[in-house]
Length: 243
Image (tube, rainbow, N blue to C red; front, side, top):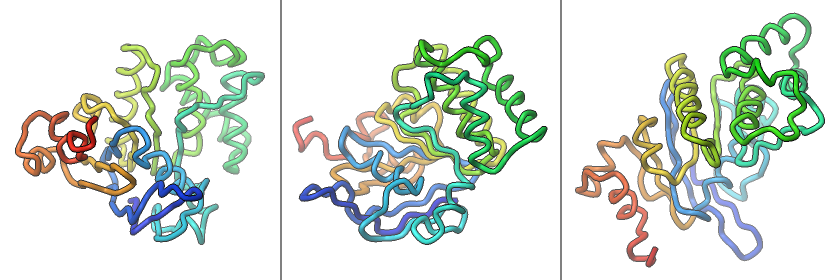
């Protein structure tokens, strides 16, 4: 479970997030949605122990991200907005490197790599250098790196950005499979169709503040609108902002 309480972060005079609080449950897919610049990526970077908040607390699997960052990093898998795979390494080498960073090695690591190559359908390009990979191939490699240590919490920052239809469908099946295996899945998006197809819960963030947190049914009820996109626009206050 992920628990966020009153997180705040400023960059100079700009407030990125302000008193952000929410929970992401185990065995659920929770979406963090909002317009560009809403504070989604900042929040996820804090949860990944990459960025330090100015105020508030965040716990992953009972570990506070600021006081126990190493325990947090060992319990989560992170797919960043830009996959950032190492171009001179093969797909297999990319995954192996991250496995070693997580303390894995030997036959245990190699067996896990083989399992992920099959699960993510990477066999045809597993031993090619990643330079020149398609966006879908890069995302698969980055996801394999995030999952190599079998984390129970997975954070995905706009994972379908730039993917074609088939790659998006494949990723959706992977996310749902991880959810069904008991993982806590938290991902950012601004595509409400994606949220509707994948998510159990949704958190709407706009202007650095949480505007809604609950189930999709509760969101529709709060907005008095069955159209999820219109409900999002209304709750996020985008009509008032002239978006």
